[in-house]
Length: 146
Image (cartoon, rainbow, N blue to C red; front, top):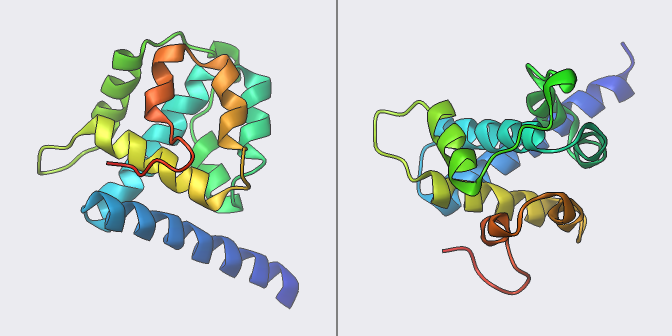
């Protein structure tokens, strides 16, 4: 394997750690829970999106995070219609933690992290395919995540 290919792997691993560290720091949780939150939100979002939108969104993700996004994907079974509450409940179910977690706060933090690391406007492109009550899960420009 060429050195360049190894650099791609090193780079995606570094970016993945940056995303997880940002989620952990901003949500005041450990890295393991932050990873689970990232995975839970990405996969629940993936299943909520039509296949074409999921593919476009995932193309913006770092390689390793894209793999997390697609892990266990069944495109013939999507999109799954989920209310905002059902979305949050799926996120909660996917996060195994010894402490009580707030799926709303973690979901908002994951979306804020995604928004921070992707090119401006990439997260906003999926807004049109989500119900309006999902909008308060996504970061608003200039408004800090609570």
